[in-house]
Structures are given as structure tokens and as C-alpha cells.
Length: 193
Image (cartoon, rainbow, N blue to C red; front, top):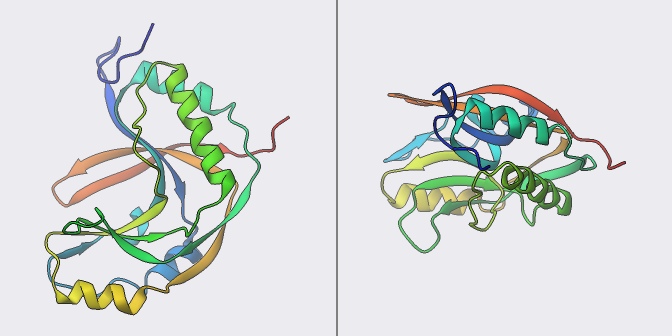
């Protein structure tokens, strides 16, 4: 039986996502990037993360079934570099400013696939868009000359490497001042048996 994304036996649901949490030293390095640009709202550094999968509203039953599956995911820990900046969507007015992971890492994509397998195994739908690993730095309301100058100035940005040895389940609560993210559970990585 497929589990409902919204609702469930107890009627409770939470807006959830899975992400890599950035270490404090990485956040400190990224903190040099924000600057005053018209129509750009920078995300607070404590909210910076690399989203592995946005789940949307998930019932309590589905959340527990998913967490049980995620506890069994096995991927060897790896090192990931943050480099380059850009905007989404491509070839249209920007809505998001991000710092990327270059070509990513094969284990990052392996982790994402195993997470998707766990999601599908319990009957939740997985978003089938191409995975573009990145950290969202800001949201844009318009693209002015200040943003173009910022992108040009930081196009070769390179941050410190991140040792990825766990990923996290977060709840996202929408507030008037923006989303507030709360970590609910950490899933350590380990080499497959």
C-alpha cells in the first residue's frame, strides 16, 4: 500500500527535506559572499545546506517508514568540494543564487540514488528533475547590474572541502521572515557490508 504524502492515520504532516549540513568552518568561508545587492535576499548562514531531496508534506507514518529505510542506506564517506557560483533557473531571470559542487562526486550521486530508492520503496513520489547539487545562498526578485557584477567577481569561488560522513532529515517551517529548518534525525554514512 502506498503511503499518503499528506495526512496519515494521525492527520499530522510535516514539510521535510534531506540534506548535507555544512560544517561551521565552511559556513564561515561562504559568509564572505553575501553583499548588499538590490532585489537579493540572502539566506541566513545557519540555514545553508546542500539539499539531497525535497520531500514536501509527509505524514508521520510515512516519515517513520522512510527513516527506517534511510537508517539502512550504506554509502562510503567521501569528500566534496564547493566551487563556483551561479543562478537558477538557467537562461531565465534568476530566482536563486547558489554555490555549486563542481562536478559533484560519484558517491554523492550514489547517496542520492539510494535515498530515492528508499523514498520509492515506501510509496512516496520522487521528483524526477536532474540533480544539480548546490547550496542556496540567496533568493532573487529581479536581476540587476549588481547581481551580474557579483557573479562575475565570484565566478571562480572555491571553498574548503567537506568531509561527508552523514546526512540529515530536516523539517522546514514556513514563517513570514522565511523558512526555519530544524534537524530531526542524522543518518551516518558507512561502507557497504
